[in-house]
Image 1 (spheres, rainbow, N blue to C red):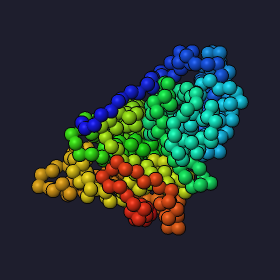
Image 2 (tube, rainbow, N blue to C red):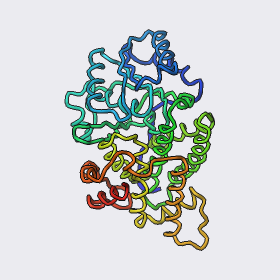
Image 3 (tube, rainbow, N blue to C red):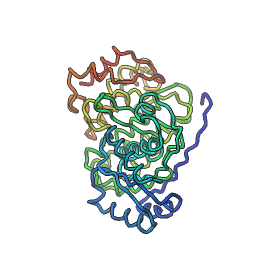
Image 4 (cartoon, rainbow, N blue to C red):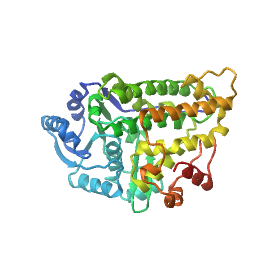
Length: 388
């Protein structure tokens, strides 16, 4: 492995179908005033809300609620959350839902005591918090984002057609997260599939960078192989606990910073997908799926060695009699075949994007370094057009 790094992840995880039993002991560590954050109300239909409220009561907590957190949390919703937290003198935030609810809660946590506008400070200037941060705990109901064990937060500004993520420092990571795979089984099939690809792409974004012999790559290859296997089972049998638990656990390790160690990382698929999402409000995992193949085919010649390894180590394609370029192409084809097999959206047209939006989406795409090719704006436009 090349370079120097420090690894520390302070989030405590409780995993399994009895994980919620640990919530009461964790709540004892935090203040009396709790902000309960959740999404569209599915937790009320499956009784999870009632279970959590009972635990809050037993723990002697006073709580306020922010409900209706959408899949792509908006700036307006963030302001609402900040106002509610301030009004109720929130000392602890409990996020119950998927990655968007966890992302939103972290954004609230760094904003309540912030004296500046959080959008400008955190999502435009990418500055770090200088104020007191309210601790966050998560009860996860969807596997995909890895938000339960990282410091990332993504907020959408519809007025400006921007969807921007900020990865904060370790002090913003959830203090604990409760992961019960059973909670993910009530998700619509479309959301489950979107989450599966979000996981795969998180790994790919870190894997497709650098060509050194890196332990992180070996871990990534194992995670990808396991995810492909479990996804095939889950798509055929969504109630398969083993498959769903493997997917949930893989999602956490795909983006808790572990496999990024020693890597430059390449997050351009996310930048492209988030820009598409800012214009269409489409499901995050599907925006990634829709732009991935055109992007990978475009950068493949610049990182052919790693793409060839992707073919042999993840998809077990025989290298006999083949050049690295041939293997690289077959690896991308294998990825495409699997994506179609599990039913992902394969183009941005199906997500609501139109030719007229391309220039605006390109303008909203943040160009990052770290991958095999630093794109210019014309290349971004080409990739987006190839994604239609």
